[in-house]
Image (cartoon, rainbow, N blue to C red):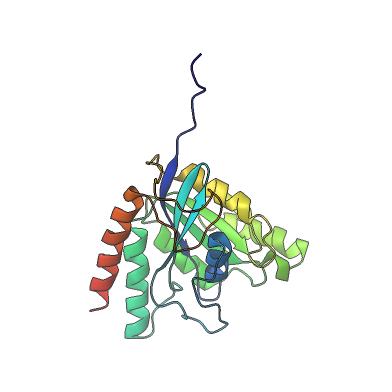
Length: 217
C-alpha cells in the first residue's frame, strides 16, 4: 500500500513593514515566540532588519522586522528606508502592519504607494486589536483593505496572541515549496530565532544580509 502523499513543505522570507510604532516588532516577537527586537514607543527603534525563524509542521518562515517606513527628513531616515526597500526586493511575502487604535493616515498611504512597486503577495495585518474596540477594528479593516491589493486582511493582537497562529498558517501557504530542514533541534512548533533555518533560507538570508550591510557602509 502506498503511503499517503505528504503536503509540500514550504519555506521563505516574510517581511513586516509599516509606519513607526505600527506594532511590527511586537508581532515579530509573538510569531517567533521570543524577544528578538526592542519594543518601544519611540519611533525608529529598529534600525536594522531583524530576523527570527518560525518552524511549523507545514513550513518554515524567516521573519524580517524592518525599520518603520516613512517620508525621510534626515540622512538616517533615508538610509532606514533604503534598508526596507532592499529587504522587500528579496522576500516572498510582505506583511503590511496597520495599528487598529490609530486612524489610517498619510504615513500608511505613503507605504501603500511604495508597495505598488513590489511583486510579492501582500498580507495586511491590523495590529493592536486588544487596544481598540470592535467597531474600531471593523472600520480599520475596511480602511486598510482600500489601501493596497492584499491577498489577505487579518486582525491580530500580538499582545494577547489572538489570531497569531492563523497568521502563521496564512503566511506559510504563500511561501514557495522548499526543502525541509534536517537540523531542527526542537519539535516543529514556534521556536526562537536561534533555530536553524533550512539551507534554502540560509542562502537567501546571507544574500539579504550582505545587501543590507552594504547600504550602511
